Image 1 (cartoon, rainbow, N blue to C red):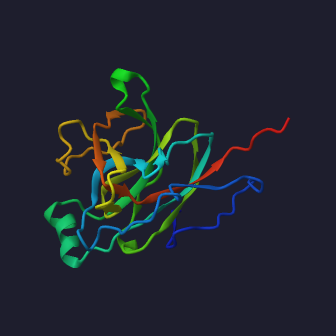
Image 2: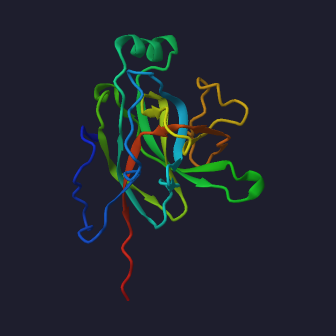
Image 3: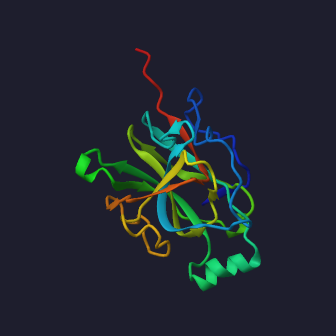
Length: 220
């Protein structure tokens, strides 16, 4: 059963995790105005992650193995006309989100390529527009050091803040040279598949955080 808490944060009862430290990836990113309904822009059919946010670098990079137990998405509140544009005019359907775990290639020639290692269920979000729902995963996703937790929009979602300083940058699973084609189906879907993240977008933020529990360190 999928569960959603319509709050920006949640207290989670984690079996066997009494001494575990819970980390909210992305929580240190400064807050910003969500783009809808003013200057309404949305993510569509894409997988992306924040690469830079002010002084923060790689805020969604896993630096210690652990488990993802939940994620939160800040959603804009489109007007009825804006909703019709995304759902009907662009034929994107109902807004939805999920999180994806990626492994970035470290070789110089293929460093834009990312492999999809794991993915959460898809969560419909139309009833949560204008709020910040937290989705608790029925089955936590194991993550290893060096992986990246990204946001995927199988359809679309108004989870974007725009007009920020140039020290904000997010990367998208679109091929280089086709960054303006935001209607293409570019999201990662098949596990172990590889896509180039050839597009970087400045002055914008993907508005999500990820609740992650690092593995305990052995004391002896």
